[in-house]
Every structure is written in structure tokens, then in C-alpha cells.
Figure 1 (cartoon, rainbow, N blue to C red):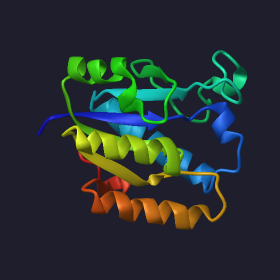
Figure 2 (figure 1 turned 180 degrees about the vertical axis):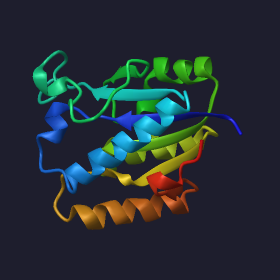
Figure 3 (figure 1 turned 90 degrees about the vertical axis):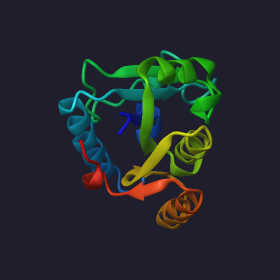
Length: 167
């Protein structure tokens, strides 16, 4: 089995200040998975999405929300695009860390989460979406989340519960 990575997308103040579906439950699940990866000494990357409006670099809204546990050993990666794999330094970082498996969680399902899953899979990584550790703020969020879980599974992404992640 290859080296695993937990990718926690965009758990920023400006994202979590929105009406995220099942926010407290999702954050609790993310924290459990972070703890598991930390105990197993597997790498964890937290991303911060940067734009010119609601997530401007260095603004309070851009910072990672303190409700999500972030170990000192975690890597923080700043990105400007929804698809993190279009950030050249990200792909280089994965190579440096010798990553073969990527577990995806975070925000938002219909944006950065689905883009990361699809691109990770297309680049040959064993890719798993933690179905109980991602969410969105759109209307009919549950329907959108379930639709993406299904689409991603059909695309070959393993869609699994966070408790199914093994060391």
C-alpha cells in the first residue's frame, strides 16, 4: 500500500461563515480523520483558497477556521484555483512526499472537492472521497452532495465513510 495523504480543502473562516449543510457534524468528522492521520504519521495538507473578494489573502476570512484541528506537522497550501492540481507546486509537493493515495474532505462539494477528486483520479492516484466529511452551502445541499457522491463513484473515486479509513 502506498503513502497516504489527507487533503482538507478550504476550511476557512470565510467559507465556514456561510450556511454550510451539517457544518458541526462535518467539522467533527474532519477532526476525527485529522487525528487518525496524525497518529499514523501520515501527511495532511490544509488548503486556503485565495480570491480577490471574499477570500482575499491575509484577510480574516482567508484564515483557516480554528474549529478544525490542525496539527503542527500539517502543511498549509495556498491556492488560487478550484482545481488544486492546476497549481504546479502542488503536484511537485505530492511527488516530494511520495504520495500514492489521496483522501479528500472539506469544502465545497460542488467546487473544489469534486475538482480535486476527479483530477486526482485522472492523474493516477488512488482517490477516496470521505462522504461524511465534505459539504456545501448551496440550496438543496443534501441533493447536491449525494449527486456528487454518485458521480464521483461512477468516475472511479472510492466514496467511503471516514470511519472506513484504515492506517
